[in-house]
Length: 369
Image 1 (tube, helix red, strand yellow):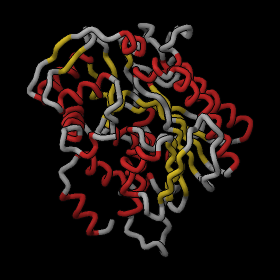
Image 2: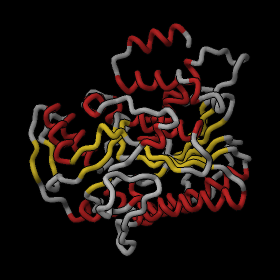
Image 3: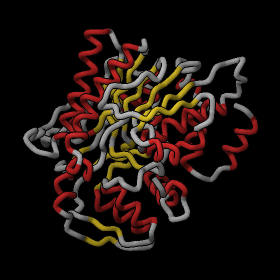
């Protein structure tokens, strides 16, 4: 690793950047990807931005001159160029970065050859589940098909479909944690089922394309993700709690808070995605969760209130919010399969929440879309 960048890594206090530097230096994650092109949909989202940050940092710290070793080109896809310039502007004029404005639910325009396709574009929070229910389903089904077709047209080697804990549905009471072969109950005849059912269909599409076209894929199934790359518009409970904590306000809990979920910090989630791509078995799904961060909503709210020096208050949700809420009361992931590949969660919930609250403070550049 280049000495200047190594010193920069040591000097930085921000946990997000420290983790990016750590991952950028893990050669095992990058061996196959060096000199390739990776297309990332949803590049301005929480996961997509972290992946772009990580790949672009890898290009900086690899310590190789361009003539010795090619870097990794990023093709970043999103719908809104104005937002993309705010979120990814530091890379805009760099040789190994290309931005394309498009909706994955439409035909994907020619962006050039891509060796890897990571589909991270999706509606991922309750307000959008109810206000954009059609778009929620479309991005996970039509968008997935369009990107699979693009990958085949461009001769891509590998497809990564970023999936979710939501595919497991309701815990039937017969397990403590979901393993990759678990399938719980889903009432498909509801508005809220659009997200998990379409994620399930997206996974099935990947299998169909592998059988029909020999297109290899992996599926990282993410726990509830949080971190400084969250968007202010995110209406998930943890996002709302973080924004209140960053403003020094009371944390608003809109239920009794007994729901227990798995969480993972965004850089650990990005690492999980890369581990599945680099070391995972093609055609397999892998849970990505920090099992040490399994917690109830009430405990999560209390933790953030402690960080903010405020308190937890209870408030009934508005109707549109309520319609987008998950009905799962116990949804925790068993990540042992991913850990067998060498992945480990590195950021504790306390460290991750403090980093995220700091990023969402009024002075933070990440607090704007």
